[in-house]
Each structure stands twice: as structure tokens, then as C-alpha cells.
Amino acid sequence: MAIFTPVWCLLDAGIVYSNKEKVKKKPDKSVEGRTVGGWFINFIKGYAGIATLFTFYELILLYLTGWVYMPHLILALGLLFVPLPIYLSLLTIPSIVLLDISSKNRIKYIRSIARTLGIKDYVQISFEKVEKTA
Image (cartoon, rainbow, N blue to C red; front, side):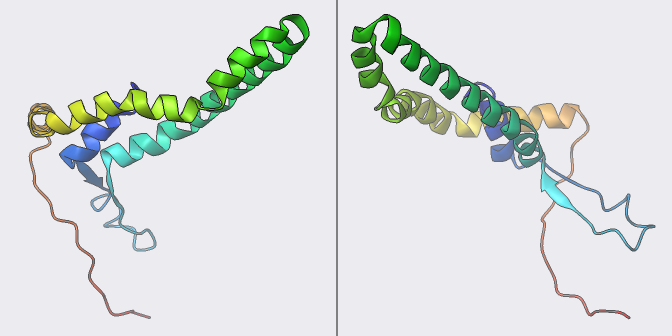
């Protein structure tokens, strides 16, 4: 959550970018408009997935080696490992509540930082149907 919380703040603030100026002279390229937070999520979700795989591998390895060396460890790990998704969900509830309470101040803070970086324009992204040219 520590990695994804700043990305969620960027998504809430609604900061977007577009390549419209870059593709103006290249008719074969399409215009892309995306959120900055969405770009970061695509960037780090692969790392989070790999870390999750390694963590589960370590837990299962610990579980299997515990069977050989400490049979009583199996019961303890079983009680922890089976309801682990429930434990993790319960542990995230306070942070989600705090993020929800602080959303207006957080959005205002992120947008003030964006203004100091030169991101000042407000945009509205819309889709319109255009006639196909040959």
C-alpha cells in the first residue's frame, strides 16, 4: 500500500497528459490522453505482482520446511496462511478510511504541487465521432 498510495493520490487529483502536440505532424499516430496516476500504476503493478509471487513462494517454502523440522509449526502457519486475505483486508480498512477523510485536502495539496511544476491548465477529455477520410 505504501507504493500505491501516492498513485491513488495522483488518480484522485485528476492530473492527465496528452501527446496531442507531438502527433500533430504525424497523421499515422493516434492521440493519447491518460492519467499520470494510471501511467504509474501500469509501471509498478508488474513489480508488485512479482513481489507477491516471491512472498507466497517464501511462505509456502517455510510451510513445507516446517513440516520436516517442526511439525507443530504446520498448525500455526495453517492458522495464519488460510485466513491471510481476511487479515490483510482488515488491516487496510483504517488506511482506506483515512484516505477517504483526507481526500479534499489531499487533492488540493497535489494540485498545488502540480501548479508549482507548471501544470496549470484544466482540461476536459471527450470523445467525438469523426468522419473517416480515405
